Length: 126
Image: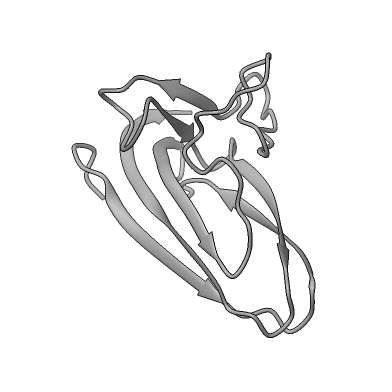
C-alpha cells in the first residue's frame, strides 16, 4: 500500500450461524511503530454496514454507527478534508491500537462481502 493512492480491498466470509460480528478496521502491527492508515468508501453485501463514508458524525465527532475506543491518550479519528478523502469530505484515520469498530448483524449461511479503500498515511514512532 502506498501513501499517495487509495487501494481497493475485498474480504468475504460466510458465517455458520446468525449473530453479530465485530469489524475492526485497523492497520498492521509494526514493532515500535504506528502505521497510520485511512479508510473510506466501506460497503457490505449480505449484511448492512452503516456510514462507510464517515460523513455522518455525532456531536462529539464520532462517526454514526462506529465505535472509536481510546488507547492511552489516542483514538481513531475522522479526517474531514475533501482533498484527502477518497469520496465525499471525510475518511477514517486508524492505527493498530486505535481501530474503528462496527457491529455487523449476519445471517447464517449468507456470504458477506466487505469492500472499501485503504491508504497508508504515515509511519511514526510509538
